[in-house]
Structure formats: structure tokens, C-alpha cells
Amino acid sequence: MRRIANGVMIATFLLLNRGDLTARDTLPMVIDEDFESGAKQWEPTDAKAWKVKETDKGHVYSQFEKRSKYEPPHRSPYNIALLKDISVSDFVLDADVLSTHKDYGHRDVCLFFGYQNPAHFYYVHLGKKTDDHANQIFIVNDAPRTKISTKTTPGTDWDEQWHHVRITRDTKSGSIQIFYDDMESPVMTASNKTFSWGRVGIGSFDDTGDWDNIQLRGIKVERP
Image (tube, rainbow, N blue to C red; front, side):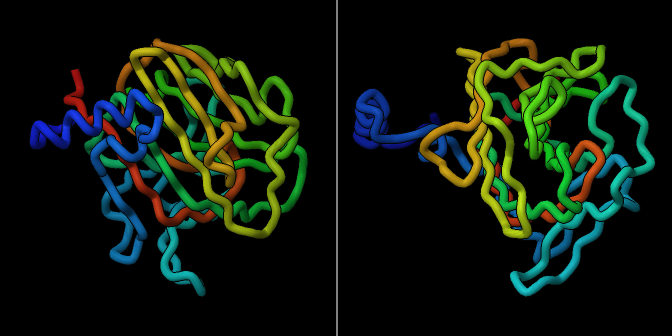
């Protein structure tokens, strides 16, 4: 919690204990990105697979190559754009996303967090149909991705509309929650304490998608 007036701090503490405030309400804003000024704050694994494009809703960050020219060291997503120079511990990440790939069983987008290097990170795969390798929360820990979800759904029902997604992360408890359109009830959960900090990012396993209105609230940390 940031240093603020004692009365406000006490009131905030009481509200948190009553459950009237969420992490999104109390964590400081780190980035509020609408891509109207480009994508200079982002670092793609393959810059040629991403572009800022103009649409009827304004500028968006478009990952348009189905399989970018990036080979991860272990079985994990190929299309990643990471926020530059920022690592967080506890955080809430919000984004609007449009899946632009044709419909099939593993149609997906992914969000990345706890990213320390190409062999150590978490990601959520929001896939059309659920199996052990789709529509789950995963960890990549110097080995091929491993499912860590404790709850998921039969699948993420992608269509040709924009959707809102959210990740919440509490490093003390290990809690990971994923929300899709409904910000009250998580569609996926996991509990894992392997990575207590890292970068965040967006992309897909090997599909395409457009991104907009990305907000990151969290506790910034210096990379060890």
C-alpha cells in the first residue's frame, strides 16, 4: 500500500477487511495502454509478427502471423509480446482481445505473467475446447509447459467479438485467477508459488489476435 494520510489508510484497511475493495481498487496503476501512440512499450519475440493497426475502435496491437519466427527452448507458446522493463509481484492485468483466427478446437489467445526468461514463466491458454493442453493455466519451469489449473471450463467460446480478460495474482497465497467477460467469477484458478515476480505479456500459442485497452495494476519489483 502506498504511503497516504493515516485516516485514508485506516479506512482502506477496514474496507479491505470487509471485502468492499478488491486488489484492482487498491494496487497502483503501472501501465494504461491503448496503442494510440504506438507500441513502444512492448517487446515481441518476433517483431515482424506484430503491428499497430487502425480499426473502427481506434488503434490496436495486432498479432497477425499465425506462427512467428520464434522457437522457445521448451514446448510453449510461439507468439509473445512482453511489457518492457517492468516486473511485478502482486498484480491485476486487464485487456480487451479479439481472436482473429478461424474457428477450430484449439483456437486461442494467451496471457503471460511471472515471466523471468524464455524457460521460466506462467501463462494462461484461453482455448476453444478444454483438454490437458488447452484452456488451462500453465507453468514453464525449464521443461515443457505443465498444467497447474485447479479449475477451468469446458472451453472459451471465441467468436468474432471483442472480449475482456483479467488475471489477478497474489504471490503470498500463490493465488492465480482468470476472468473472461464476467469479472465477478473466475473461469480458471490455480495456486502456485514458484515465481513470485516477473514480466507480463500477451499473444497466442500459434494463432492470431488483436489487443487493446491493457491496464496493469501491481507492485513493481526490481529484477533480482
